[in-house]
Image (cartoon, rainbow, N blue to C red; front, side, top):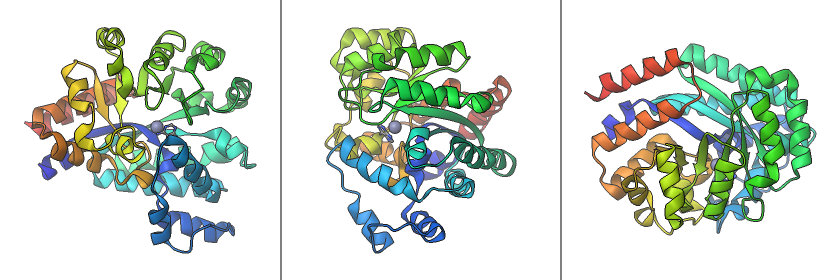
Amino acid sequence: MQDFLTRLPKAELHLHIEGSLEPELMFALAQRNGVALPYASVDEVRAAYEFDDLPSFLTLYYQGMAVLRTAEDFFDLAMDYFRRAHGEGVVHVELSFDPQAHLSRGIRLDVQVEGLTRAMRLAERELDISTALIMSFLRDRSAEEAMEVLEQAAPYWELIDAVGLDSAELGHPPSKFAEVFERAKWLGLPGVAHAGEEGPPSYIREAMEVLDVCRIDHGVRCLEDPALVAELVERRIPLTVCPLSNVRLKVVETLDAHPLPALLEAGLTLTLNSDDPAYFGGGMLDNFLACQRAFGWSRQTFVDLARNAIEAAFMSEERRDVLLTRLVAETN
Ligand code: ADE
Ligand code: ZN
């Protein structure tokens, strides 16, 4: 099964590129840039990754990314991830990035975008990984600031595939960003949003109805509202579920207790993703393997999940055809 799950062409739709920063690279970049770290060793960093909830993780996540200063740093970060993902059979990656988390440290948007997009082009050429870029807004900051960042990104609108919404969820409902997502839609940029990770089902509904998103990131709390589940099923809105993340952020107690089997049973369009692989104990393959161990799913279930991701991805129809054909060839 490990062999099968490695070969399965996997599309990753929910990845915070800053959350792919492995402690080894964190140390290398800290040294390169003369940034002091509050850790003495790589082991000490890993030992610090014990989280009680989403906010306790976010503190270390924002702290860790302080080593990213130049376009080269963003390039190295993304290439490091693409190489690992390639080794796990990942064929398409949609990177979210958090521009405000860098702008607030004085790192210009052009520096961020140049580094990330250069890595994306190289991954496409050298690793045959297709990529998409999602510019995410921090929901615990103001809507005005998000709108300013969207406008500031005018030179890069062509390079961005969608806008997203992340960071601390509770107390920051999607409706706070109605105008920002309206403006993005007017610009031709689709929206995705984290909702129903720690927040209530009503946030999922708002993301669908007020922001008109085409995917929900996480969404696992939808099961608390059967009418919402029915709507998600009816509209075939994909949920980008992140099993190991949910365990590490204590959204669920254990993977065995994860609602994934119930979400599948409900007929929802699900995809499996890694969220912040450097912080949550593994990438795409680890997430697939953990689900296999916890739920004993058949090959067909994994093929269905992989197909959902390819069908829900921001990619050309040409590329989608190639990957769907490869999915059939690899799994027959
Ligand atoms: N930013 C990075 N990872 C996140 C997560 N799991 N939820 C919300 N914001 C995030
Ligand atoms: Zn996330």
